[in-house]
Length: 292
Ligand code: SAM
Image (cartoon, rainbow, N blue to C red; front, side):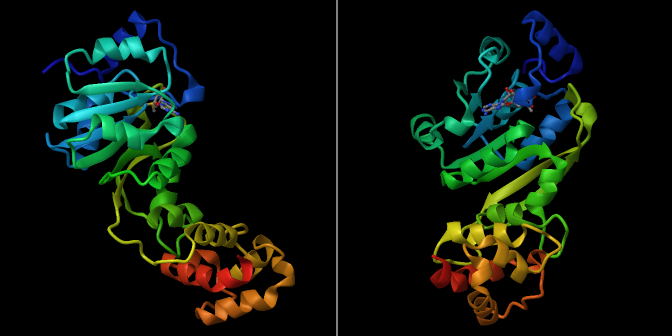
């Protein structure tokens, strides 16, 4: 087995050799601790029968750990400057495909068909660029990829919001949008000291496992997310007030909103943060005939 990329000394050597300077705008905070990497990979439960998709391999710190554990790794990297670096650092491995692309523009389904055809178990594993964590996750979830789930590092505050349960101050429309499709849990908290350069915020790794069934079947999923977003516009306000402000002409349609709330047994004085996903689903369906 070759020497780990992710040690402070080796990382410094690689950066120096290529005259690489970090781009803050691309969320470049590289991992420099092999123990953390081993831990992240273990949370994904990979075997040689599995494949991993990585977003943002950087200089290959996590990529090589994935390559040692999984059958194949496909990694999407936006920064062209890193391609020759990866070519060099990952040369000991023959089961890695690096694709130069912005993950937000990539046709990941097509890449899976072309590169991972023989794999039935696929996980997305990444230390995400923090400036686009949510758009990346939402894109990959809405692409409905044939994957088992995600093990991804992000800013701790975002991890708390994604995994939050009803009745907590972190629970909101992001928790609902992700938990509608995925079971979500925080897998580990990660200190700033394991990154180069160190980020200003704390980090956490979350594990998302695709649900076999959505928690509640609705007429229109987009409308469910519209209603849930609208219910949290002003967190301190009641759901009734928020829906009046957020639904089209809501102020003139108080009766309809009250009717819908009553039909599904939600007290109009409750706040959005107290409603479960199932309650939001029923509420969206009750509002649908009036607002769609
Ligand atoms: N995986 C490496 C590690 O853990 O050391 C690097 C992680 S660093 C937090 C994020 C990586 O994502 C960087 O390599 C950055 O260039 C890349 N990146 C940023 N935006 C991206 C995007 N839209 N698509 C693909 N890669 C992106």
